[in-house]
Each structure stands twice: as C-alpha cells, then as structure tokens.
Length: 503
Image 1 (cartoon, rainbow, N blue to C red):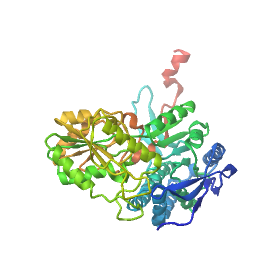
Image 2 (image 1 turned 90 degrees about the vertical axis):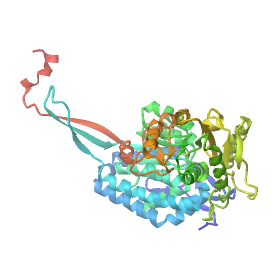
Image 3 (image 1 turned 180 degrees about the horizontal axis):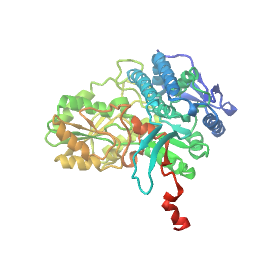
Image 4 (image 1 turned 120 degrees about the horizontal axis):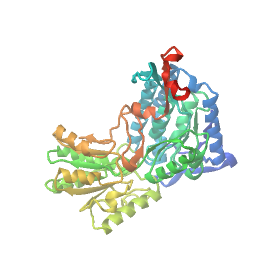
C-alpha cells in the first residue's frame, strides 16, 4: 500500500499530539524516489523539555510505577495487539520513510508485536523482591534484592530499523514501570509516531510515553543533560555513543549503548558451502548492509577462497535491486544521498588501498532515482585496510584469506568492535570452540542475524555498554536495592556497636 498524499505527523507529549513550538516542521524524503512524502513536527529544546517534564510527572505522581505487574502486562499486550492490527499499514509507512524493502518491514512489524508480547509476559516475571543468601556473620539476618524502576528514560534510536528499535527501547522500560521520552532518528520518525497513535488508544496513563522528532543537537543533547532524566539508552554509531556518554556523565546518568560493529564471519573448511554462501550474503547484504551487527568481514581459508568468491559473486548477481515497495525486491536504497556518498567513498578507498572489486562497486545503471548502491564484494583485502576496520553501513563485503583457524580468530578479533559474528562448520564442537574465542557479544553458528528477544544482545569493546533483550536487558531498566532485615532481637547481642561505644 503506497500512500500518495503528503502525510502529516505531530509530536506526542503528555498523552496528546501537538505541533512543535513555533510550528517548525521537516519533510521525510522517500529514499527510493528522492521525493518528500511526509511532513513532521520538528521539536526543539523547549519541546523536549516539555516531554521530559511530562514523563517526570507521570513517574513521580502518576499510577504507572505503582501499577500491578498484571496491569502492566495487560497494557503492553494492548500495544502489541494494536501493532498487529495495523502491521501492513505501518510497514508501508516505514518502507517509504526508510527505504527498507516491504518484505523486510512487513516482517519487522510482526517481530515487533511478538517482542512486545514477550515484554508483556516478563512484566509479571521480573523479580520485584527476591531473598538472597549471605554469610550469617556478624549478625543473623534476612536479605532481599528489590528491583525498582529507574525513573525517566531518554531513548535515542537510529534510522535503520525504526519501529523495531522503538519496541526494543519502549518494551523493557514499560515492563519495569518506567516513563520515557523517545527520540526517533531525524530521517525516520514516522513509524515511531504511528506507534504513538496505537499507544494513545490504550489504557497507558498519559505522560508515560512521549515521542519527539528533532535533531540530536537539540533533542538528543537535552535528553542526555537534563537532571530530570535518570537513564539514557542509545542505539547508534560508536561516535555518537561517545558523545552521549560524555554528556550523560554530567549528571551521572545510567547509560545503555548499543553501538557499531565490524563483525566477522568465519567459514571453516568443512562448512556446508551452499548454506555458508547464502548465510554470509544474508549476514552482510540484509537491509542493504545497514545493520550494526552485519557480517561485513568474511574470513575464508586459502583452500576454499576461489570457490567461495566465485559462488558469492554468482549469487550476488541474482539479487534484485529496485523499488522497495515491490515484494520481489531484495535490495532497496540506502537511507539518504549522504549515506550513499559515504558508501561510495569507502568503495573508492578500498580500491585505492589495493583491494579489488569482484562485483558491484557503483550505483545501479537501471535506476535513475533513489539512493542506491550495488551490493559490492571486495577481494584481496587485508584486515588492516580501512574498508576492513571501519563501519561502512552499506552493502560492502570484504573477503579476507586466512592460513589456519588461529589466524582467522586473530584477525576476527583485530577490531575496535565486538558486536556480532558467525562460524560456519559441520562440526558443532569445533564451531563452538571458535565461537568461545571470538571477542564479541553474539556469535551465530551456521546462521546470521537471528536475534531472540529472550537472549541478551550487546557488544564487547567499542560496540557498546550493557545489553538489550532477555532478563539482562530488562534489568538494565531497574535500580537494585539491598534490604537487610535484622534477626538479632536484643541490644546486648549487637557486639559490633562496640566499635563506636566501646565494650
């Protein structure tokens, strides 16, 4: 379903949709047509402050943090049901907003709804109070851990998976009783604002969820520096993560950062090559390579190198590049002209450093409009090259030869990043041994990109701090209080008071 008329979107603050102060707006550009298709209210610093104040009131004075776990579960399920009901419509919105293929965005809607249902179930399962065992010296006591909501959460999400990223942030925050201000990416705010429309029709108290569209320099920095915000969660580039951490340090906010990657795929000599070839291409070229955990470095033994490259090139040439609204399209455009030029710049840098383009490497000739770049495979790549060390965020795969498994693991770990990776082998025990040695937050064996909402996701090294998903990710949105209950019933037995009063 393609919308023809210009769509209008407002900010969502304190349970109501409103224009930005001064009536400021910005257009969303369809990456496939290079034409504006939606106009969105553009928040400034004062709008963001208004949203933060609403979230603060909702946390300090409203019912949400004090609501029963069963009631939170009910409301999260209402949001999930609303997303399911409008999934086809919002998928079309996101395809026009982001350039993601309709078959990808359609899947994202259903995944998002299922993830919200998981967070709904977990709303009743998060241990609010649990007894722990401690040594009974010097005193007999009972001890408990109490998990409490952190408070107001500032959430900043990227443009590559707009609806999914909104769910990743909103779900665990609501599950644990927090309130929030969500800032979608400037390029892709529309599906998050569609989600706000769904939320507005549920029983969620006003002010609990607020959505503001604006620049990082105004909205993002206000979320990071405001003393009314207790936690900041970002999914974005490592460069932006450094800035967020720096700004949040002024008020000692809790920070969760899910950042960039340069993930390694290792094909062992006993791998099923049919599966490894398609899996490696899926790992790199899914969503035009615009995924932080994409497997952009492919390590292949000298023995298999030529065969693997030949088959990679053959399969890549079969990928259909075109209109992302067509279900037959495998590769859509990149998000913007700026990103397209960045990717083309990296391709030029690779050639300048001595790598060779085996396939792709330019804009597709049959598409006059749109921010397209052909799926590109480099060979003769050294792991020290710029294209092998820096996150490109585009459809560029670097094939790197290795001499033995130790050599492959060494090069895989020779990166400032550590977000994802994969091993391809018939021998699961051998693959697990390689996976153990990879310094990365997630390793797939004989697959790629499959993330379970019940398993933690996050990075080593400069790929991030903290985790999304699973109980570990949910508890990132809680404070932990230790409660000590004394079991010594008389003052004379409390001999440790003698440290102050004497014997």
